[in-house]
Every structure is written in structure tokens, then in C-alpha cells.
Length: 377
Length: 255
Image (tube, rainbow over all chains, first blue to last red; front, side, top):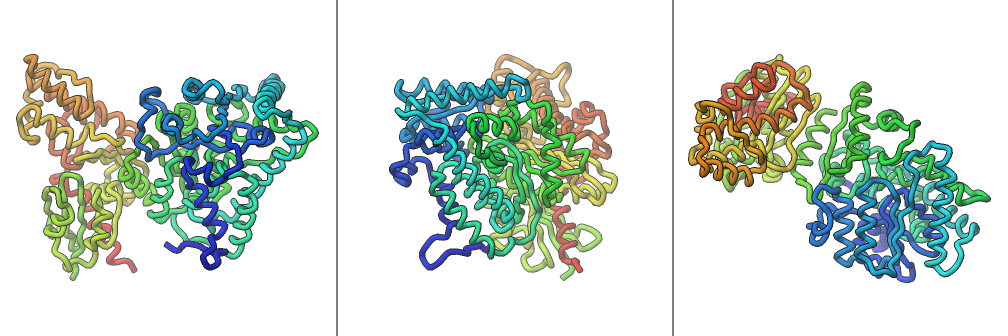
């Protein structure tokens, strides 16, 4: 396998190498890597990061860890909860996330809600835990004013924690910084065929943990470097869909089997960086509008959104030959999406493969499934 | 050198098919044992093939150790092998030592869709071996033993290989008839695997392959439950190796 190393001068790591390394950095090493940045944890792609940033904190996403042998979480969570929640709780109970000033959740599925409660119960009273209560039905007349009021409440709590008001001016500056990331990643999508699948996802993972003040300039450099990088070789072209992709070994397998990931709609990757919030006189309302218009999580109801057509439209606009549905085992909302999308993909003649990801998955069985699927394309 | 070969290195057995372009020149099945690569090397005739394609769980290791030239998945191998034996095949059910698969086969032996069991060995050959052991018999005896049951099957509630074994032991200790217990074990497999078959869809011709296909009780129960006649190849364990050999022939004669 030929690795692209453009931009790398003698001894000095390239922007790509730095971003990939940062994306794979275990969170326990975060405080040593980014001293001086007070970190606020978050779990869900719906958490309004711009507000957290405007209050002076760096949002750091807590991610699942599939290869972790759980030591603590099973005492508090049933084995039929998803690996994301079990392994996140395990890291928290193991003390690896003690550097976080607090953790922010968003109201999506019941498991996430229960996890927020467990997080609070296991933390000292001074620890900051908040759940941003999103509307469930995204298209009722009340959804927007309700969400704006909820974001205002969250802003006030953050102001109290920060000991200073989070002003509209602060928020507009943070929105500009986060919009810049989204814009750069949109540009990176166009050069995606010059990056391997493991690198692509590691670079997007880095956006979720690195301070954006550090990330954005590196990403800009990467974009420039990639201008001259060669397009990667042929091989079956896949589209990845699902919630989170917390198993980098799956990407290594895809790479090993000679396939490419030409696009994705994962809430730990491309879905997180859609569109722009934009500059507005009412930044809180702009944030609410952004939340309401993004691709909805299957735990939300949007009558205008049909999961099958949404995937099909994206796949058809891409050179993808097949869809790999990456499902966290026991994730009911995403399983419902899959069930609804299946007949749509069947009718359209788009091949798809369901991979159920669980804590400590059997990689050999995954390899057989993936290889057989690639042979079909 | 006109021969090619297909090697299916499974969790319980290794199967070899040597193919001369029209028919199998040699077919063999040996135990995988604790040294799969050593046993595979002993089985093949090194240097005698224009191309050797490996499949099964040991496939990648076989390429690393330079035994094989290429690999294909077991799913593709079973599909190709079954299609060669029965050109009108539509469904293949393959139950091997540690996994079970259902394949929808299209024109030319192409895989249209498939399902595989999840990580655990419930409902596979290994499950049957453990249960035969708990009942004090060899795995070949289990099917006929179950078919000799008079009356209803004793319901087995656990499909976990370990828990089912203790369930069997306590049922026997309680004085349940071992024939009816054995029938219950087979019924449990059919219920579990049957769900997976229906996800792919039951379509004729329905080929039942893999080592477990030798079991006469499963043959009968699957046919009854799925409502279709089952075709069991004369040697169900070599279907994957045959598919791999056919693929090797294609590779060796690629223009």
C-alpha cells in the first residue's frame, strides 16, 4: 500500500500526519497535549458546540471504544445497551476523563438520556452535566421557539459556570470558527479520493477533539498539500452510513481488502459538518435553525425526511457501488432507519451490507462479511 | 501442469479439491486440528497446481504462508460450488463447524445477498458436537438418535452452547428420554437458523451444504419447517473447496 506523504519535509510531520495522529490520540493524553485549554466533554452531534466554545471551553467529544475490555460500565449498564454508551461510561468511571470540566449531552435516545443520568450520579456535585433538551418533532410550529428558549437556558448555565456572560458577540465569533471548519471539511470532501479511509476518518475525528484554533490552520495546510497528491487507486467504492464509527479496525479491514470509502453519512463524520450556521444578528436563533435543518438523527421526527431516500440520493450523487450500514448493536433508532431504507435500496438495486458493531467485535467474521460483499460489487 | 486446486480451511475440517478442467481429480477432507497450515500443506501437492485458491477461516494465512495464490470468501466459494453442482440453485444453506450462512445465488453462481450468523457458535457443527458429547455419543450418531424419538421433542430453551449443554445434562438427570432431548436440540437449531434463512428468502432449488448437512434429522426438519425439498450434495463438505477450485481455473485461464 502506497501512503501519500506530500507536504512532509525531512523529519517534520506533514499536516496529514499531525491530524491523523491527533485523531487517534487517546483522550487520557488530551490534557498533556493541549495545556491551557479547559475541556468540556460532549457525546452527541446535536450538542451546540459553538455555545460551549463561546463560554471559553474547548468541546471534546467522548467517543466509544470498541476494542476496550470493559472493567466498570457493566456494573451500571445492561449488556443490551450500545457499545458507545457502555464504553464511554467505562472510560469515565475509569478516571480517564477526569480532565473534563463537565460533560454535555443532547436529548436523543433513551440510552443517551440514561447515560447522562449515570454520568451525573457518578460525578461530584460540582461537576457540570447538562442535557440540551431538543424537540422530538422537528417541524411543529413550537419546535423553533422551544429550541431557542432551551439554547438560552443552556447559555445561561454556561455563563454561570464561566463566571461571565456569554454574549452574542462571543457566540458569533465561535460560530465563525466552527463554520470555518465546516467549510474546510466541505472542501476536503472534494479531495477525499486522495486520502485513505482510515486517514479520512481520523482527520474528522481530530476535529471532534482538537481545539479548532489549532485544527483549522492544519486542515488548511492539508488541503493545500492534497492539491498535488495523486488520486488513490481503484477498488470497490463504498458509502458508509450509520451513527458512530468507533472501530478504526473496520476501516483498516476495508483498506486491507482493497476497497475505498467514497462518502459517508455518519454522525461521527460527515454528518457533523454539514452546511453553515452563518453570521446573524440573532446567533442563538441561527444555531437553532442549524439544528433543525441538518440531517435528523433517527431519534427525531421530521416528516420531510425519509431515511431511505436520503441515503439513496447521496449514494446516487457519488461514485459509490455499495452501501455499508454501520449499526451499533442495540441502537434501535438507527435500526429503524435501516429497516425503512432497506426496501428503498432494494428497489433501486443498490447493494448494501449491514454490519452490527458491538463491544469487542469478532474481526474475522467482519472480514468474511466485508470480503463477500466486495466480491458481489 | 493442467491441474488447479481449491482449499477450504475451516474451523473443523480442511477440504481440498483438485480440478482438471472438467471434473475433480481428487477430493479430500481432513481434520483442521491444531496446526491448520501444517495439515493443509500435507494435504496439497505443492508445485502441482497452476493456481491454488484458498477459502475458509484460514484463507488469509494460507496466502501469507505462500500455500495459496488467491483467496475468496466462503460465501462466494459455496455459491460457485453449489452452482456448478446444481445450475438451477437459488438458495444455499451452509452450516459448518463454527458458522452458518445463507446465500441467494443468481445467474452464473453470482452472490446476490447473504446472511451470516453472529459471533456465537449456536446452531453450528460445534454446537452439535458438544451436545453429542453431553449425551455420550459421537456427532454422527446424534441425528439418527433424534430421528428414533417416539413422541414430542423436549424443548431446549437455551441456544448458548455452554448453557444448552447444562440444560441437556439436567434434562437427562431428570429422566427425560434422550431421543426426545436430541430431537429438541435439532429443533432448536432449525428454529434459529430458519429465521436467518427467511431473511434471505426460501427459494428453490435449496441446497444444504457444509459438514452439518450430513445430519439426517436436520435435513428432515429443515425441509418440513421451510416447506421446500432440500438438495444435499453427495459430499457436502467439499462444496466450498470445489468453488475455490473453479475460481482457480478461471484465474489460471484468464485471457
